Amino acid sequence: MEVKILDLARQYELIQDEVEKAVCEQMKSGMYIGGKAVADFEQEFAKYIGVKHAISVNSGTDSLVIALKALGIKPGDEVITTPFTFFATAETIAMVGAVPVFVDVKEDTYNIDPDKIEEKITDKTKAILPVHIFGQPADMEQISQIAKKHGLVVIEDACQAVGAAISGKKAGSFADAGCFSFFPTKNLGAFGDAGMITTNDDSVATICRAFKEHGMAQNGAKARYILEGVEDELEGTASPDALYNPYKYYNYLIAYNSRMDAIQARVLGIKLKHLNEFNAKRAAIAAFYNEAFSGCSGITTPIVKEGYTPVWHQYAFRCTQKDEMGNFLASKGVGSAAFYPVPLHLQKAFTYLGYKEGDLPVAEMLTKQTVCLPIFPELTKEELMYVTENVKAFFAG
Image (cartoon, rainbow, N blue to C red; front, side):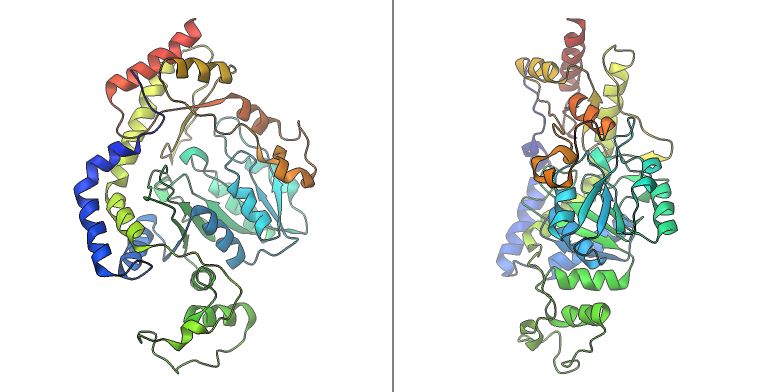
């Protein structure tokens, strides 16, 4: 038997008719970037997360860059974040000219350790950027308290955590801004790149909308006023609904081109209706793994804190024989993944920050021990049994 780490084609088969109809309708409409499809999905997503605003962008990476810029992060500012995450989390901090400051993570949840944040705060610190790693929410209550105490903004990297919650409140609704990725492998995946920023702050939403589209037109003018206090000299001279809108060619900020295309919005709108069902199936698979591995010497299964609802983007357990485990499973036709082999503070791209091995021991340990097993919603009971049997066979052998 072969069990892939992920099989996107299976999910497509479940929604094929609905998706193909919607995509064909969109192609016939002649509207391919933005428009009603994108606006509708933004509204649906904002409602799902429980926020006032959802601003669509081209990718999860762009969501982080634009959120950082919109919240005033400037060159030389320090942003506290985790070293145990995908590269884009810290890369985007560096992209806006700020300095990533890494704080070690908790051994049980793999998320940033709030108890270690305050010791890294300096007069240059402007933000905290926690990651809900593998779909497990970080401790947003404690992080928010620390941020409030020190006058810092908070940006949630919820790129792996769409639908995750703490006491019923969804990830992406706790902070000044939340950032999501709809990369095809995510729990809510597009058929290409796409992302979203969420916020309850009207000004942040306006600035994000300006930054995602060349800093132009009405949003650009409004954002410039918010950021610089400069009045718009064109206000009232053109209808925003005009076919030819002069505002389009007036640019008020140096910004980005990060627009979601309409076909992705249609696909994501369909998948959003199924998201709770898909996430529930992932949770059932995680429970199956936890039960199968209970009492299994050599495995440390993931911990879920009381009141927390993870969405199991990955099922990552700890094993001191990580490489050997991966090779053994591959020999049996079982897909696995090694997220992440190098902690961010030791990535060559961040050599200039001066970190060395041993500085963040928990994160370094996790990169050497975490093994991710298949956990997509369409896995069969037979496949799950085959996976667990082979994991246990490795330790038995």
